[in-house]
Image (cartoon, rainbow, N blue to C red; front, side, top):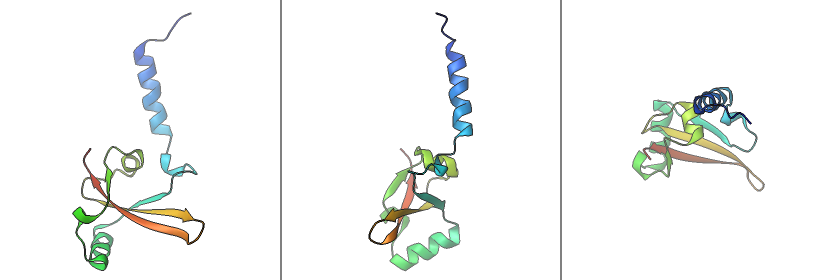
Length: 95
């Protein structure tokens, strides 16, 4: 049995990652990177700083797809059986 070289598999994996948008998967909640103005409004509304938000790492696949940077704030909207939907905010941090 012939096994393709390692470079073949690496190229295939890279191509697959380019073609798959994880944010469109039905099990992934909606992720939105907030603008600087929206970020300021959220932080002011809750009277907190970015460092006080729960964290999400820059290596998270959804964060990679959004091309977010450290310090960005992500709004995550999840379906909820009791509240219809719930909103969470996360600060992008290093690994």
